[in-house]
Amino acid sequence: MGGIGFSELLVLALIALLVVGPRRLPELARGLGQMTRMARGAWMSLKSEFQAELDNEHNRRIMEAADQARRELDGLKDDLVGDRDSSGDRSTRD
Image (cartoon, rainbow, N blue to C red; front, side, top):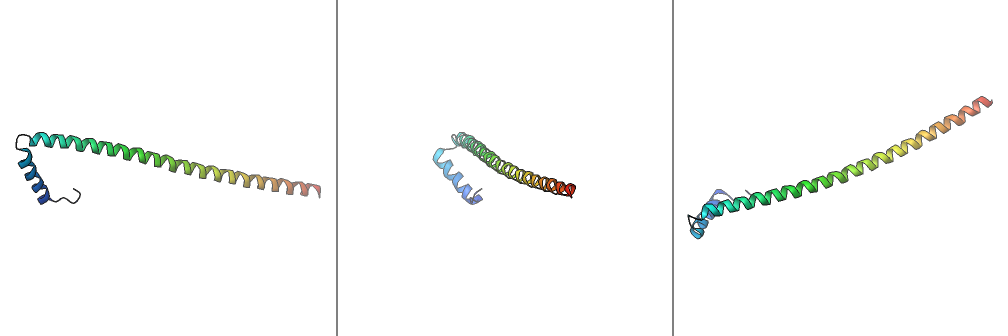
């Protein structure tokens, strides 16, 4: 629980019991539980949106690298086909 041990938690519960009283303590605990769930849900939502954005950026970079590699391969293919055609023309002339 983030550095809070059982003894510290017990002391906090006793202080809350003395300050709030036994009648309002369950209602306070429910309210704190609801706020904790809401905060955790908001954090998970923010985390998932941030991760999705990072994934989109990562995928965009991969696609750009793949496009660049494809263009380079197409250029090499064109060079090879051009070299083969020009060497083939010379052999027919001889």
